[in-house]
Each structure stands twice: as structure tokens, then as C-alpha cells.
Image 1 (cartoon, rainbow, N blue to C red):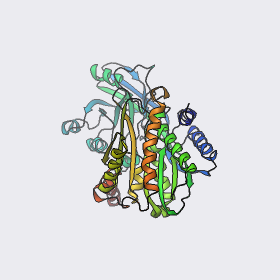
Image 2: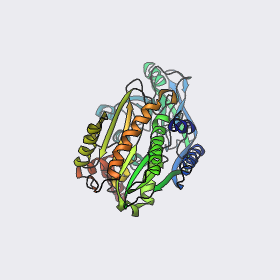
Image 3: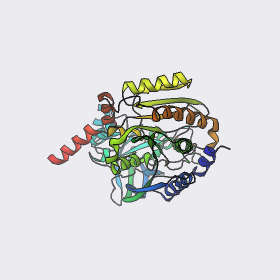
Image 4: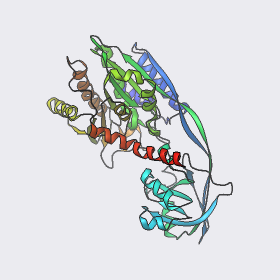
Length: 424
């Protein structure tokens, strides 16, 4: 068995950001680095979290039944006795849905992102419910995910909110639920999450830094070997290579905690190391990999010149990697937001053969040779740049990419929320 797969098995347990299990995984990664003779540090940072105390949903009319729900992380609390209100399936919050939602507890489709959340607030609904899972799930083979009203949503307000299995939501709508009672109560808490960091000094171009990153936390219920134990062990093998083959430029290796909670680890790292970013010329991120059936991609959050360089390299070397100049929702974003261009390497499992963010993200679906293949082309790509006489492209995050970063981070909306708060 390869060293990569051995390490993947070691960290293949549920390790949610801020948990004792996440710290255990950080310690395993640190030990792996230090076994190579390289110093590694675990850098703690604080995160905001939520502890659910009560989550109940009861249909009162025209039938009576209680359903299992999870309170949204950071949900607004209801009174102790809950809130009783008419029930309305608001589907996708069209103007008609908005007009029919005032004073009601509503059920909505899909994940509640900022645009949908603002419509819910605008509608005057007194609470909302969203759905998770599939119609084929049973209580025995599914897990009820806890959704979150992150800070970008709560900047505009908050509501009592819960998630429900889609099969239960189906029953409520099919049976004509018209009045419900929702009770959610919980507490905001502060936890400690962790990043693991290690550095390989460069030889003759040590003042330029190339950064490698991968998040190592998972979501609840998931062993997270695909997302993103795979990226974590790929970066570990690249570090192993450069320990044996000293690079001309300095290399920074980071394993980030709490990525699944909103890129919190990489955000904390760039904040703590802001003064160093002037020396970072590039960031390489690996997020999801190892699937037997799938496709390798490189999403280049940098200039067109950088994207062309990556595409040309893969073609010249015979690596079947789809290259695009685009953003990817992972740890390269905080770097690009601070002027450091990045590329995220990802191997998406093909439809029906890739599992993410659930109990089916297990090591049985991964393949050592797929990990080795991704490691090989990322390593080769990085090595050519790291050891070049002149770095192959400029340290630039162009306006069209900056706009995508700003949109992803909801900067315009957050400024609007701050202004609204100021004017109250």
C-alpha cells in the first residue's frame, strides 16, 4: 500500500472543524511532516459555532404528526413554546411565493444561499424549512444535515430555521399540511480550529514563495477521504518530494481546518500571515481527488497568461487535465483576495460515482493510482515553476477574476448590509 493511502486511512474519520477529531487529524499530519525531518506547527484559530438544544416540527392541521428536523446552525431561537403558523410551500420564492409567505412558516427548495435568504426575509415569513437528501433515502441509510445561516446571511437578519429530510417534506406537501409548530433553540459558542503549517526553504531564490494548500476537515457524518483527505495526502507527497529535491524557491505547505464552514482556515492563515503575502508569488490548492471514475481539472484564479501556461504544460506533458481560468470555492480564494494568484486542482467524480458531503464519502470508492496520477501532474507542474530562472507569469489577479472573488465573498452585499445597519 502506498504511503498516501496509508495516511488517508489514518485521517479517514469524521473531523468537523473545531472538534477534537479535527485536532487529532492535525496532529497526525504534523507527525507525518516531522517524520521527514521538517518542522511543522499547529496554528490554532477561533471559530464561531452553534449547539442545538431543541429542534421540533409538528404538523397541527389537517393531521397531526411530528417530524425529525435539525435547527440551522446560527438559527434565531423561537420562544420556548415554539411558533405556530400557517404552512406554505414557497418553492423557489417567486414574487407569487413572496406575496403568499407573510406570517407563515415556509418550505423552500434547494440550499438557502444569500439571494434566497433575502427573499425569505423580504416575504415576512416567520420561519423557514429546507430539505436535504433524496427521495430514495431511508432513516437507516441517510443523515439529516445541519444547514447554516452564515455571517453573510445574518448580516441582513435572521429567522428560526430547520432542515428536514426530503421524504418527510414530500409527505407534508402531499398530505396538505396547512398549520405547523416549529421550535428551535440553541447557543452560539466559540471553538478552536487548527491549521498545520510547514516550510521548505529555497536555495538561490528563497525570497519568492510558492504555497501549497489543502483543507483536512470534513463535514458531519463524512469520513471526508475524497473531500478532502485526498488533497491533504497529495500535498504531503509533494512535500516529501521536495524534501528529497531541495527547491530553488521557498515552499509553504498548509493544511487548513474548517474549510467546510466557509474557508475559515485559509482566511485565518492569510490574516495571521498578511505581512508575508508580499513574498508569495503563487498558491496551489488541491481539493477533492482519488475517484476512480471522474475528470481532472485545473481552475486558474489568475491571469489568462497563467491559465494558458497551465493548459500548455498539461498538453506538452500528456496530462488529460481540463484547464479553465475561473474561480473555485476553496482555499485559493482568500489568497487571490489578497493579491496572490492561485490554481485549484480537483478531480470530480463522474455523476453516480462520486460522493461528497455525506456518509458515502468512504475510502472504498477511491483508488491509489488516481491519487498518484494527480500527485504526479501537480508535482511536475509545480516543479517547473518553482525551479525556473524567472517565474513563468506575473503575480497578477486580473480585474475579471477579482470581480469573481468579490462576488463569491459577497463584498457588495456585505457593504450594503453594513450601510443599512449604520442608517438604522
